Image 1 (cartoon, rainbow, N blue to C red):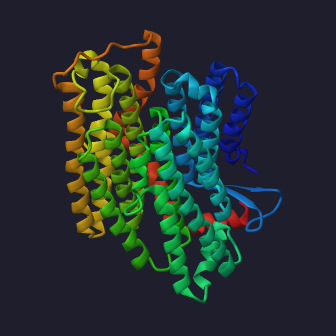
Image 2 (tube, one colour):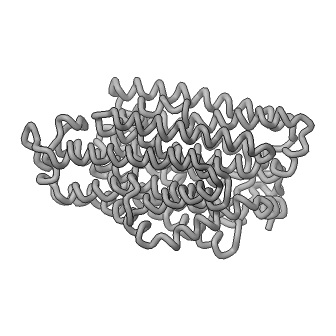
Length: 497
């Protein structure tokens, strides 16, 4: 058994338990969480290197061979996502040391953050549909408490919307899982690839595909199932919103990619065309919602929805090139969008508001913060040579090669409005003359530097991913090739090698 497949789950789990043992010592919990996230990042890099060099890795727990036991499997997509989870966990933990209020820290913020990341890693590594449901529920429980932690009125309102829609998603997911088992006799993903095509009622398989599309679509916030996200993601502290925007919706996208490249590939003309249509609507509705907002976090929350559309675009086109582009885009958007949310937290710390009409003069107040906003903002808009340019270029090229001209036109149209909304934040918050004098930095210089450090790392990564695009894009291509050739995954999991 490859221990690297188990450690991404064990490390945050053990860290969460240790934080509980030191419940009354918040500063010790901070150090434990930062250390745990650093270890998780190192494990993710080691797993990525192992899969890159030695191929898909599996672990069968309890001495039961697949498809009967509990299977964990890591291909390139899984290992990339575990690595980015470690990175985002570390950056969020570092920011939280200064950016999270002590009240929430004393009521379990750090144990909950670790449990959340344990669920995220479990979802990326599981090879079984039912266990994927279990990891989704672990994430839901931790994320609901994190969303409501603090008990503010806006938080509770957002949390109710969040948990209600996600419980509906979970119910559909569980029903679909039960029906899938009743018609196939297995829930092992590799085994499902072999047996789904032999089901005597292909129409039922299509219905199941649509049920899973709705279940994961709610979690990923695709059109028309997205409305819970902008209503809830702007309510908790920025550190919580950052980890939610960076990872939770991406777990839904990951599940869609996994299911619709491995299991539901029997009628791609129908299923993937529907995904492509949803992609276009998700892009347009998300960006129009963003353009209409004047509250910084709500604007960025609508952009989460819009960027999900780009990720679905690659899955809907369904070629190796488009999947590689989606995977690279996912890495890019996790980093860039997380950086922007962290910037919004610093802006609020400086000014006491997220309202763009009340902001202004931040370029003079903090040129460093201005640069750390401008770089990921332009990356999100797709300005060269930043990461977003290459991500969108790869998607557009894949769409042109597949002759899906309409979705290409929509993606370019949406990019223009994305740029417009980023310029709107830049001009309103940073460039215009403030109506009131900007607040002074109300914390120590050491805390200020610690809060800016995660921003600098993430903003720097958007630049590095743009300049040194080839190594990362090659990993994305390798992941896409594995997805387009599921025999590799099936043989490794069921063969135990």
